[in-house]
Length: 97
Image 1 (cartoon, helix red, strand yellow):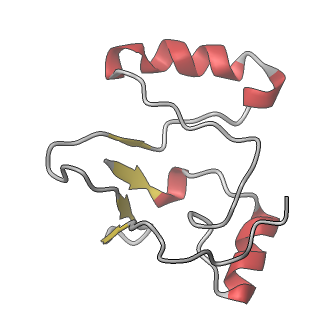
Image 2: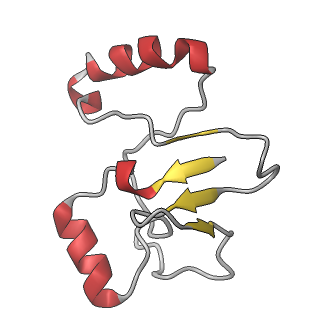
């Protein structure tokens, strides 16, 4: 799986707070979001259906499953580099809910 970091919808306030605190928004607890794995041939239809709902207005495609990285999630950075998105050993922040 390759995820394009620039396409992950992170609100500016969250991005700024993470930058100040040295946190990675991909690892911080988040609620009210959906990640869907959809066959490529259905992606546009599913995206359209999601965007038709008020809570899905910001829905977008953020990556794709690829054979090059079996069993791994790799993030493509804004500068064109890549990094492995590993399961964290612990939590950056404790869950408060």
